[in-house]
Amino acid sequence: MSDIDLARGNRIATSSTLQAHWFAAPLAAAVYPWLLALYHGAARAVERGDGAGAWLGAGLALAAALAMPAIAFGAALRLGRIPDPSAAELAARRTALLAVAVPPMFTLTGVGALLLGHPDWDIGFLLVVWAALALRIASADRAPQRQAAPGPAGATGNWRRAHGFGAVLAILFLCFHFSNHLVGLVGPEAHMAVMKVLRVVYRSPFVEPLLIGVFAFMIVTGSRLAWRWSARPMDAARTLQVAGGVFLVWAVISHVNAVLYLARVHFGIDTDWGFAVGAPVGMLLDSWNIRLLPYYLGAVFFVVAHAFCGLRIVMLAHHAPRASADRVLVGGTLFAALLATVIILAMCGLRLHFA
Ligand code: HEM
Image (cartoon, rainbow, N blue to C red; front, side, top):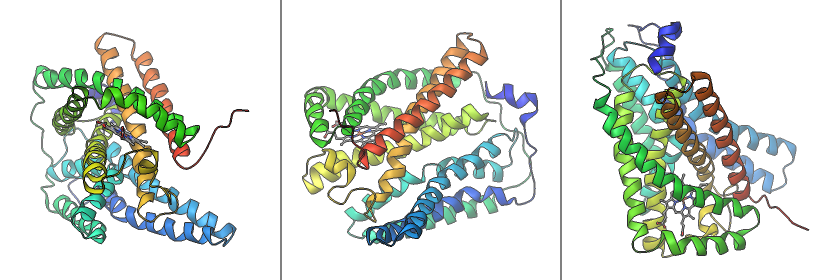
């Protein structure tokens, strides 16, 4: 499907000289933690009552941090349109797709550093990763090369079908999971009351291992599909699908590790609303917890948008008109953004009051 758009003249030429935009994504990902630190400094000033300047600084720093994965996505979009990328361009494309996932990567690295007893190692570690990837792009072969033929559709077909089947089970859980988080708009007590009911099912000895198994399966099959698709020319829908998938691989690993190991085993605490929002300080005023905001926002957004990307592919495979399939994706993406925003606002303290 992606080849259709590209054949219509949307492709961009390959380049044999180093291009600045190849490095935009790793650079954006490298500065992301510093922008969150900048936000925290401004948020502390707001807390002290420093006035409008502090509010403006906090807003701008948070917006800048949120813009970093968006810059990486923009780079992935541009690099995805090259039909026969050189090894350097392919490395830049895959690095850009990875850099979109900087929010969950930063969270997972932060938890890893915490568990290792060196909580301040996270930023340095990620800097080394982004520098190594930038070096890899700079040193890779820049000669244009024709990619190996993608192979028959069946080569990825079985993986796609298996991934799609797993997605149905994952989505079923997530419908309840996100509905539970929306109840956070009423308050932590209401959230807990609903969670207690849902836990009877998803924490039962049969369902919980099945659920974890399904997510592990999604990670394995999704990683393989993302690797293969990222070698081919990608249109905007495909880039959204692959970038979202890469984000979700990191987000699910980070999230399941935080819930099942960090909270339950390491800290021995309940994984309730307070755990999710980083109580008592919360997400907005804690230097560590602020990293949860872009990560949760992206996780909810991408999981929904990714599912709609899949639905679009299924519609096209069943000969639905392209315009209808595209409209479904645009609508689904807007819904994803709305849902993610509302859940984050609830987690930041927005409450509904019924008279
Ligand atoms: C705003 C975003 C999210 C928040 C605040 C959140 C919060 C939580 C919390 C508090 C738990 C523990 C539940 C319990 O103790 O019963 C949990 C479990 C879980 N979440 Fe999320 N979640 C979010 C998004 C996601 C996403 C995007 C996924 C998957 C793509 C996901 C998958 C899971 C899974 C698999 C579990 C483990 C369930 C279990 O076996 O206990 N969550 N989440």
